[in-house]
Length: 475
Image (cartoon, rainbow, N blue to C red; front, side, top):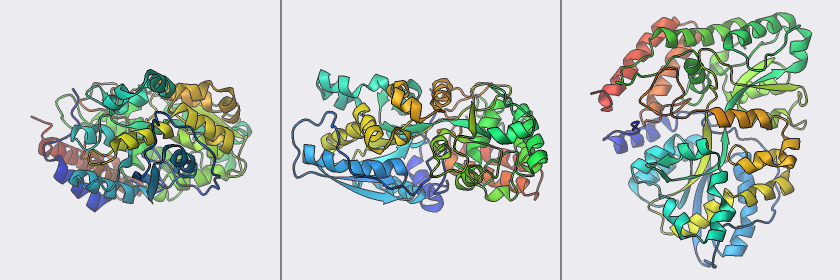
């Protein structure tokens, strides 16, 4: 079984939370979705497994402030009305959320009943006993309630990333992969055609031609340091080129020919055909460039598709094409991230918390969001029924690409050669927050010209090797 934690995990994770605060940027995606300003209404709701009234119980939910979660807050009034359960939301930026929630679960304080966590955290926290196993709660449901919720409707790969020792520990609110966006008009004017399933080499050639034709970035890629910023897309490129972080004996592989080639390709692509000042470009900055028509291509999270296709938020709506994550030595290299709802083990209201998280992640909830807020903003990436819905398909012309991306990701074996860890754009070990950020800083230094890629990766190799030893992974 792939290792996910170390014997000194509590001290490590508390130190990481306090010092790094999550390491990813507040407006990132790939380990969290960008926060956008949207106006929401207060529609009704359906409860799944609500059962009898629980009047007098108050649940505290820690969550991030992004559009999907804002909609959830606005819809909660009807859940409260139907169940008698009061729900209070503590809404925080992603970095602050990770810090406060990590402190709470590590200390067993039980300040929060329900926490919003990523698929990176879920198996690690489950192994440490910080969040509740959900299988017993499903077992207590009536058959009618289980059928209504329909766990099997949740994509298998999304469920798998939230599973530890064959038990589900969180329910997905939305999920994403990654894909390549391109401006159809810009490519046509440059006389180039996007292949159905492009390689990274083909993408690089297109980017250079379009930049020469339009004098705009041929492609935008993240360069901002952070395990959830530059390392998110870059790790999928490393996987595509046949690289990996460790071999099966936990020997670091960051200075291997395949990994160095991937990083050199990424850095050179930005320098030759990308945006200036890339080392300060995160998800938000890249989205702005693409949505304002100031870039020809962008490789990033599938969750951005709805924004780019919305004429109220994008100047290029209707002009964007979509293809899956580029291939190289390996195909199907898109990442997998999800925001999920979990119940703290220290919660005093676990039964009521289960009612809420099954309501907020149900088919009925998604249907209500689609009908009241618009299908383009319905929670995506979690359920097969969403992608089979004609209304969603009409509102989301990119849905087939996103669906294929989600169906083909391999969370446990994303590399050409075998690996001892799980994860695509991250490693599912607690030390990766720190390690990934430190490695990203070395790569950013190479991107800014302070050192060569080879020099950066030699330092990264030493850091990765030290973690393998200090974490007890390498025997």
